[in-house]
Length: 122
Image (tube, rainbow, N blue to C red; front, side):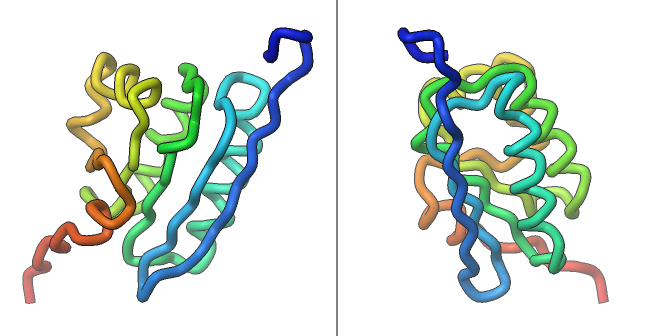
């Protein structure tokens, strides 16, 4: 909530780069906006991209409801294929909960996209 008591909006944008999908969010992720975050993740995963980059670099607040959405996203793709770009307010709860062991956390979208995909057995 903002100082005037109104809920802050969550802006979302989805784009593709090669076979990866990039979901960018701007605003606050809390109990009120988590359903919108989940819907945006579901939409981004609809075409089954090889990689999903969730760009939270412009997120100012990240509550436990957001962690739940990240966990669901991580379970939707093979290990390492959900990559998170985290601002300091987002990185802290991810690290404190140990979710950084399950997710690939990065400082920039370019860094997240540059990660080598693990080789799959033939």
